[in-house]
Length: 409
Image 1 (cartoon, rainbow, N blue to C red):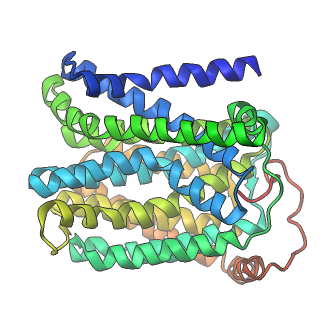
Image 2 (image 1 turned 45 degrees about the horizontal axis):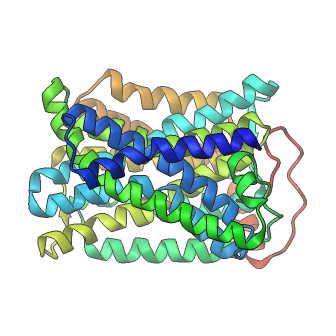
């Protein structure tokens, strides 16, 4: 317990520079300031994640799931919405909002999903990560949302009606998840320490931690996003690529680490379920929030328009999601499938061109069709699991396999 207290205190200290810099108006130089704001966001995200887990001790499962899902991607929301707001004042920032969104989306599938399978394989020798049948809700929801998202690059904009549809999709998803029966939360690490406090002390602690972490993130998000662009110019990097990959790495790192820890502890299925939920969040509220924030900032209700590069990035991201979703229609992710996701994701770093992005988009879609054909026998099964999970009907458990254990969410 003492080590967990030290970890929490350390994160409180590490997350403080963003607040201190903003309150004091101190300027340590654009590179140093940007780095400190980024570190503050990451540390605050860990505090939020631990607090959200511990909050399951005090609120209903449905509310807990909705809250955890929102908290998990709050750092990315803050950075991305900051770019969308600036785009309303200066159209040049629109490309960065889209870059950050597509980078975060592709990182989850191209790096985090394979990471869990590789950890599972290294720890146990198992070559297949199997998901509980209750995660059919995430897989089916992601498939529907990915199909919808695929039309966005072809119309060249993210409109306000897209925001309405995607928000409704998120609400429906949360309602469905709230109906899933769950076990008592199995808290680990700092979350366990917070959850073990007496009720009143725990609730007060949670309110204080949530408030502090949210303040640290909100204080850091705008200057971090703006600083990335200026830092890219100062250091000679491509600003678009810096915003697309460095910013999401900062905001997504808590999800990576938490999922990785779960996999290391033999709960890879639970970690994978959390990453699937994050994908649903990103394709609904995150994407849907961009045109709303842009409209409020600019006063223009015409939607967030995409240039050629942005269109390619959104198409590639949607196509990757289609392929990944087709893979997990069987509610499993094998070692070779994980390797394919990682290699295809890595190609965009090695070959940076319009032709490569379009070719990879086409390849992802062809592979998705191939996987759907290959897994066609699994489609009725996952739809049946989806229906039974929503109705609360218990199914025969999935064959025991390392990495599949653990309750929903």
